[in-house]
Length: 147
Image 1: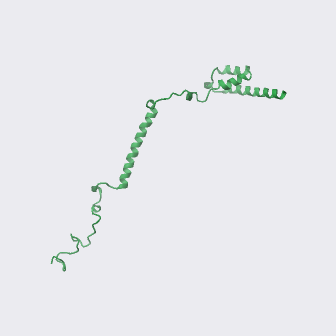
Image 2: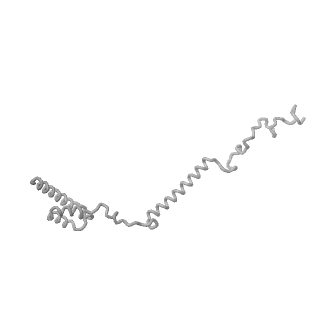
Image 3: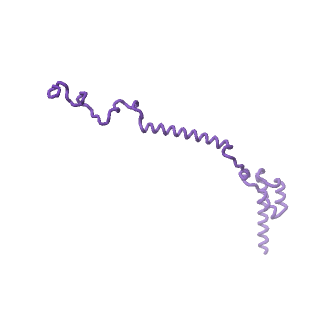
């Protein structure tokens, strides 16, 4: 029984010292309920319950603002609206660049943009003799039909 009482007394002292140091060094803006000096007095003069109250009630949360955060409609949020404008501009630039790349990949689209030798039909064969009809017969040549 003595060991149990000594163990509880040690636990009480450790809890009290922890709560006292924590209350003394805790961020002033996050302390809830009472001012700092009042919490220190509660921890010192109300054994067991004082340190427990400090831990449960006195310590504020890390982000008290996030708990009370107000939801905002998207059309009221200026940051969201600005981001929409930037996104639209970026989409437009991307579309323009994609069109330019497609033009480069497909080559020129109109006949006036093509070089002159590309305008020939794919069936046409080169005329090595240089005559107009491509038969190879020169007028007045022996064996030609004109004679």
